Image (cartoon, rainbow, N blue to C red; front, top):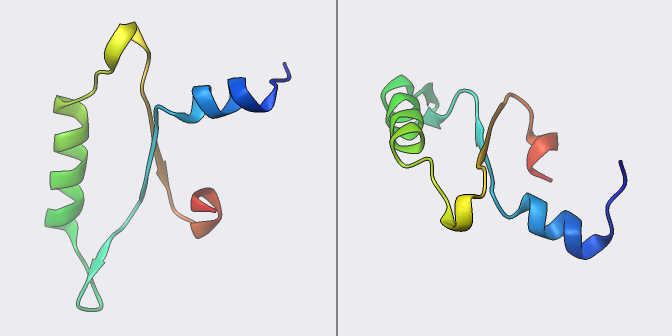
Amino acid sequence: MSLEIPQLLDALNSVTAIPIVPFKRDKIDWTGHAKNIDYLMRNNYLDAGRQRVIAIAGTSLIHH
């Protein structure tokens, strides 16, 4: 399936990507990570019935 640029941008409008293990002061921030996931799962809705995509990634490549 291929998409034209406008359709691709519209489809990506609902994507949320977060790092799999966030860091705080050079240490893994498990509490912060849990808060991020909890917030996203409790607020997982968009207008007009659009589906939201939540991506959990372990590499910076997914963010670029």
